[in-house]
Figure 1 (cartoon, rainbow, N blue to C red):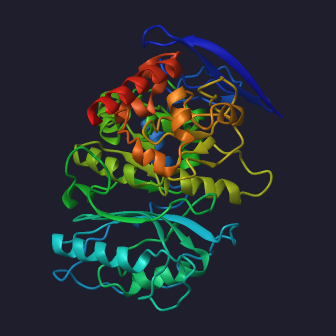
Figure 2: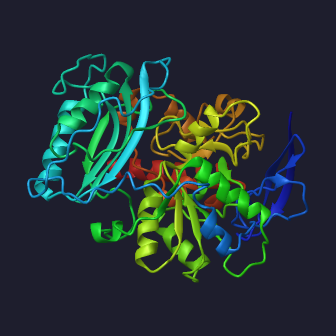
Figure 3: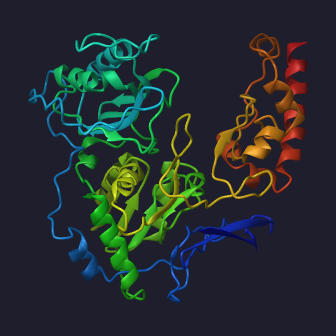
Amino acid sequence: MLVRHFFTTTTAHGGRAFRGLALQTRGRQGRFWTRDRRQCSDVAHKTGDGCGMRRLHHEAAATSTSVGKPPAPSPYLRTKRGDNAGEELEAQPLDMDQPYPAQTDDGYHTLSFYSFFEMTEQTVGALRDRMQTEWGASNSSIVSDKPKDTLGVVGRIYVCGEGINAQLSVPTQNTRALRQWIETDRTLRGRIPRFNWAIEHRKAFKALHVRARPLVAAGAHVDMETLRHEPEYLDPDQWDHELQAMKEADSGTEHAPLVVDMRNNYEARIGRFEGAVCPDTDTFRDELDAVRSMSPDKKRPILMYCTGGIRCSVAGAVLRADGYETVKTLAGGVIAYGRHVRARPAGAAPSLFHGKNFTFDKRLGEPVTEHVLAECDQCGSPCDAFTNCANTSCNLLFIQCADCAEKHHRTCGSSLCIERASMTHEQLIANRMGPLWDYRSRIHPEKVFGRDWIARVEELAAAAAAQSKQNES
């Protein structure tokens, strides 16, 4: 049984009060993240440990990694180039991604993968064009075993001189054909690890977009020399072992490990690991600075996790190149951990991740556990469903319950947004309006506008609409 408790706290931003949510289930107590404390929940047994992060003596951390297994070689780094200057790799088995997920309701598998290897600018452009042409299609029902036929893939792919990063939804009948395409392509053959299957499957994108751009927005170029300083990859069992050991160890040691959520702060609102620190950051580049600030001691062990793993692969490499001695990360991120939790037999140890894994696609999240850690931004009821304002010019990202979605017509609640959400496509074209907010405002309406943010949104949106009409005249 899940019991929800609410509390009120005062933030460090303008002294505003807001409501927080705690959970209690089967004798377990949650103390949850607040914006003034900048720390995730520490869901733990009632042992009197307090809500701070449990720490492990660094000597114990050094011996606890493998749970009896040596560190596995990296599946993500390929030292051989992926262009004509490099050596061709052998094709991997076409069935390497099995077992495939079960048949889905809408006929799509959702997956991700990334790999680091060198390419020339010319090779990047040619690969981008091939994938855009041969992977995407307006008719996603195409079925073929021929790797040169269109595969009906939708999603987002970034390619650059250091590799590839992809998040995709693929027609279930074409999943094996996608791997066949990869293993017959000279650039990708032997370089793409096993697909990182999503926790929940459905068509998560509208179309396929292949872009030549950096794999992650690190704020500076990350070259192959840096990426070779890989972090140590832990599978879900090894990760659990590390976190469990921290809970059982003395918390007052000098080199206590730091467990960091390397995602943006809004992602952590709906799900996070026990004992993790969630920096109040809006971008990946800010996250790196936050880690350095929290751990100036480069001997201090760092454990990090993110959605699918690539942000931690890059961040871990950057930190190790900077001299940090021990950096470990959860291989496959929360996605892989969530699958692991779903596959556990009844009676297994409970998940150390609570809530939802935020996703950058139409789903905006996939459940790992049944914990609800957040609340509706409009009425304060328990809720973990992110949405964007239905007025695309507004596009605010916020949490909205079903009742408020109906009441406010799936908008932020401003009269202007409600009106525009009801317009036809032709009416929107005739009444064009540019973006109302910058990125940081769009993801933090409660921080930018305060508790009366809906009224403030309405005021500013109306002013923008008036300015737009004035410009047209």
